[in-house]
Length: 279
Image (cartoon, rainbow, N blue to C red; front, top):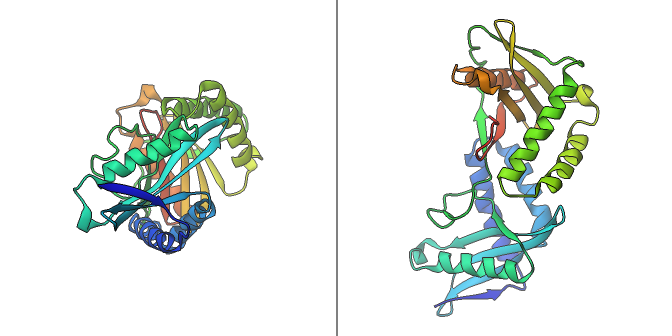
């Protein structure tokens, strides 16, 4: 029978969790310094997690870590970790731990439960909606540009329309992912953009691109350099819908890679949101 007991001292679990997390970040390819930076971000919130030992007939078989926090006015639960030792896998402990975690969060008023997967989980979370996938692309040499497509800096005159469009798209991403209501998403969008690019086009370490083909505007790009050590984050690499299916998505990625190298970074990180327009 699977049972759960809250830990008073999380030291042993945390050491094991950090080792596993660091290994998964390193395997993703952004480099050791970037992996350590990502791990440090996780460490800042671990003190708020509740960790339970999973046992079977008195034998520890794994751990599950949970938390509930206010996210833009909505209580949200999170399964921060769920691990069952390989020796005890396939006996229903993971499913029991997922159920325990969901119940723990619901008892504390959570309206949803999120999880960020860094390792394959099989079918354990098949019923969960995928909000986004974080991907990293290592760049070892300058990319080959797509013939006929050019990337140039965005002008000040083009910026307001681009910003309004990006905010609308971001709100749509959040709402479709089921994270927030439309009103909450708009407030979050305003806050996030004000924080990320407070000086607009002049915000340091950001690149804003306009993609053109045959003199026609076909898309845009927005990249943040030094997002992590050696890593550029692609907030947006967008090809307009009417220009889809022409291979321009590759051109947008090539432009992002070129901007990444020009800034001195060697990896491009981006999020593929579920059922959205974003690259």
